[in-house]
Image 1 (spheres, rainbow, N blue to C red):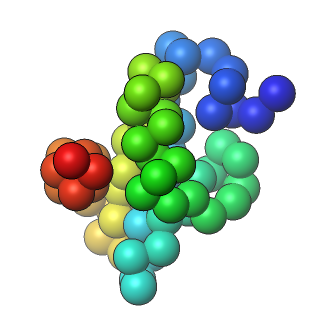
Image 2 (cartoon, rainbow, N blue to C red):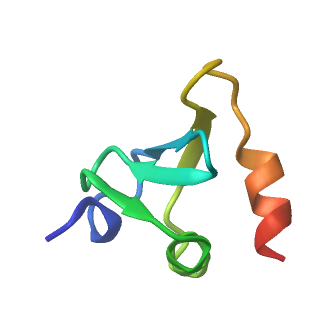
Length: 66
């Protein structure tokens, strides 16, 4: 079972690298906006942080999913 399917209590850390690449630190793999949309629909919590600055950019990413 992957972390995406795992415990809904712990948010997954997603890091955004330069070039808008998104990295799921739980599954150790790059993800797409489609993958994040599936996580939202599955009510899977995640936090997106800019890998360079460490800033929380979750709200910005969620707006892009709409």
